[in-house]
Amino acid sequence: MNGKVEWKPGNMLYPLPAVLVSSKSGDGRCDVCTVAWAGTVCTNPPMIGISLRPSRQTYDFISETGVFVVNVTTEEMTHAVDYCGVRSGKNENKFETAHLTAVPAAHVDCPMIGESPVSIECVVKEKLALGSHTLFIGEVVGVHVDETYVDDTGAFHFSDVKPIVYCHGEYRGIGKALGTFGYSVRKKKNKRENSDKRRDKKEDFSKRKDNSKSSDNKTGFHGKERKRVVDKSSVNGDNIIRRIGRTGRKGTESGSLRNRRSGRGEARRG
Ligand SMILES: Cc1cc2nc3c(=O)[nH]c(=O)nc-3n(C[C@H](O)[C@H](O)[C@H](O)COP(=O)(O)O)c2cc1C
Image (cartoon, rainbow, N blue to C red):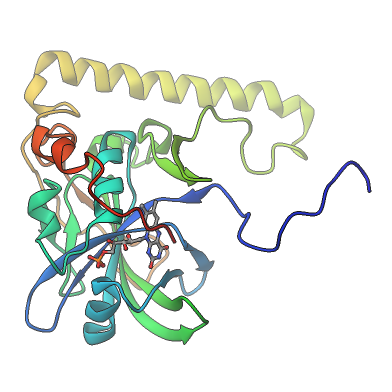
């Protein structure tokens, strides 16, 4: 009918974000776990839902403390993302084995991931057992972005982040932008002007980024020392962004990580 064949019932909603969820136990142990069953579920108050199987150590930690951090991942972090999704923190400290940097969060007692361009602190508001998975709905109490992607006007350049998604068993980049919010109804006479403005702004930012890289390589995107910038605003307002800097690590694809990934892990998804 209509050129569509009925498919077996199940999860076909892809792509999904492949995020790293960091957590801490009541007795102070830290864990990091890959989660694709994740998404924004409310704008005001800002809320994120993540679904976890009760067998995950992350499930235990979040149940104990009621807090977690959602860390957006990048193409550079793909190996770590896979690794943290096939090894349990019950047997190892994945911050160490996946070469991720634990950075203290500001509003909850839980680590953020230094390598992540965006880390979102959450406090659990609801815990719903759905079946195989339990949905934790967390209210966002703090957001941290890597200052590398913030320009002088305070704009955050997500297009430079190169985030990854999880799609039918594969990790993928997100490709080029195809439009902007509301472009389908935007008045035609403004269209050209708006796109020119956007292009100029982007070019300007890229130029500044390149200049800063060539003038001082150590402060560019790669290999720069961690720099933390003080909280810019309150968590009660719309803008709850605090900036964190890069951590001096060039990606997470270390030799030891690659070796560990060499097929011994049982790939459990979702
Ligand atoms: C791409 C990917 C996505 C995943 N998504 C989820 C998920 O949404 N929920 C979940 O419970 N497990 C998910 N997993 C599996 C966990 O990440 C995995 O079992 C991990 O080892 C649990 O770690 P922990 O025991 O340290 O918490 C996913 C794994 C991969 C590779």
